[in-house]
Figure 1 (cartoon, rainbow, N blue to C red):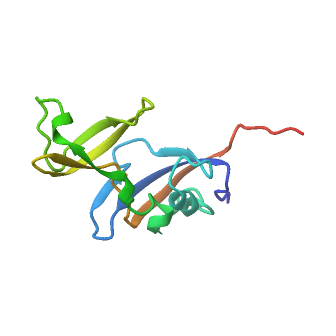
Figure 2 (cartoon, helix red, strand yellow; figure 1 turned 180 degrees about the vertical axis):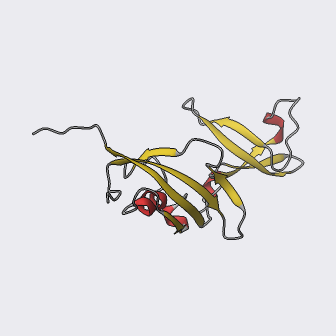
Figure 3 (cartoon, rainbow, N blue to C red; figure 1 turned 120 degrees about the vertical axis):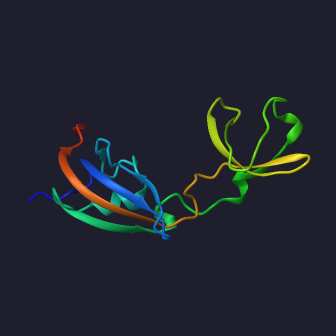
Amino acid sequence: MQQVKKGDTVKVHYHGKLNDGSTFDSSEGREPLEFEVGAGMVISGFDNGVLGMTKGEKKTVNIPVDEAYGPKREDLIMEFPIDRFPPDLKPEAGMVLSMSNGEGQQLPVVVTEVREDAVVLDANPPLAGKDLIFDIELVEIAGGSSLIITP
């Protein structure tokens, strides 16, 4: 039976949970996730978790922080003067905003605290600093990548 190897394109159903059992993402009710194994399209722990699986196989993969979204970075938490917000925007803790990085890229940030003179924004990925658990079902191995290398 064919086993998943690096370079294969696969389709999987998944259920992502945190250590407390709460769900953060799932493919339930959607098309399976399709990606090329080893191409950096998913976090490394998920990539490594499907290696060696066969069609129809189900397994649970525990992914430590370093193979997921990495540790929470303090340099991505910043204070932003409240007077720089548009007057009609009233920031509240938990609110997700979009911020430009100066190169035209939009980055999601979460308001973590609102002070009298400043708002604390966190640009870390929401799952940074967390170990993740994925229940994975391999639906299909669609074959290797279409990249052909010739000498």
